[in-house]
Length: 420
Image (tube, rainbow, N blue to C red):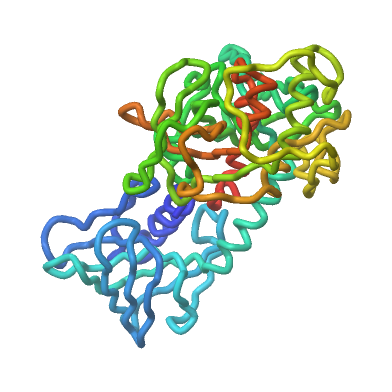
């Protein structure tokens, strides 16, 4: 559940408490934090979570943390439906118990049992699952249409601006993001790429080298954006070869070509693991060589690295067009063909079309480029890993090819605040 949904439900119950004395007092709920019952049995309490089962007048609630709670709905229980985005109960609609469905988000106020595993409800504030899904889709579309993402090159707290570098290959450009007191600013947790785990932040926490994604109104020439919302994070770009794979721990040890050190990263179910086909890797490598030589992307280069292992796969002599994808609006800055203005391809669009792989498909000596969280205790979590990149590392021996993953491979934030 997103932090915004949690807060909205809490606000709604607070508003209800004035009309329904049995409803508990309000206090802030952060994402992943479950409200706790008041001390002592039979006292006012609250629970927030998703409906697991509805059986007659009984509801089984799966809270955001802790064991399931049995909710008893009485004839006097007030059940109110609110829409995502509402800040009070002015537009709330009374509904019946039979209108509740599995998956709906509810905030329940009432009296808890001795063991705090059941609650007699006085009020139930509901956000329908279907409403949240619709809001999610609308927000995602808005992030795609009005979102930009890239690497921070400068930050100025005095003027309230952040400058980012957007794009890859020869199509890089700068965008100045303007913030105000109304701009919502969040920052990813050190070991999470989930938007729901992002915490409220400030402009002062954003540093050059961070990744930023912002949503707002883009200027006519595309060089400035007035931000409604910003999410930032500090991530690691790694380019190197696999040292070892520990399937039991879901970790990968990589020899970083830039730092010459061994780096360990975790692979989770949310990690994106993909492998470039040889012909695509060849085409991208040529663009990297051209960019490194200061020439036209795709032009051949006179030199290549000799200390990077080559793939066992045979490359083809042909150079088919790179796959295209749907336009991603301002975030891609390009056309509906998946390319950026000027003809340079959008690497993020390309990745969505290449085959996925698993941790078991990676072996010692494979060349990879990785975007990972900073992590804790020196072990980050993989966001995106791309293998089959031997030709890319040959074309960019200084490991600059890893920067292709950094224009923002995580896509739009999720949840009702961002769409992820």
